[in-house]
Picture 1: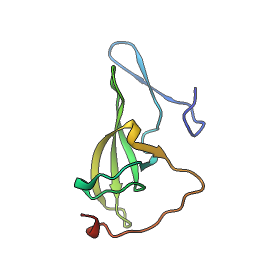
Picture 2: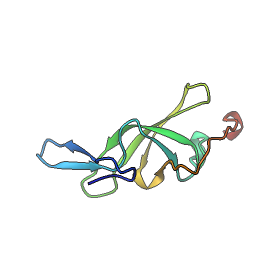
Picture 3: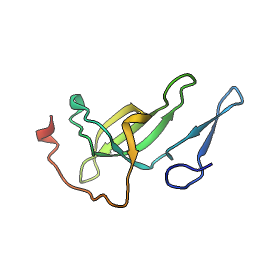
Picture 4: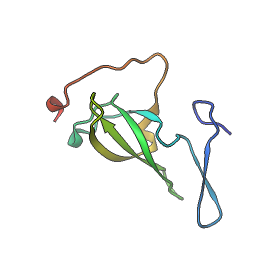
Length: 102
């Protein structure tokens, strides 16, 4: 089984002996699908996955780290899987002022 990039999904072992399937790989870059105003983040901001949070009876979540243009961490957030999407080859990076977003 593969994820959206064609890579094998990562099997995450659980203490119960079951496995969770991760759609995204750890440290993969993804895009926010919606604004997160209280953190100054906007739809289209690029984030790095730093943790997967499997849920047995609901939607899995991911912890994301977001960086400024110089590589400094500006936020670490946790969002449901439906709030992120993969980068695509027809997208380009752009710069916006984070200070004005707050």
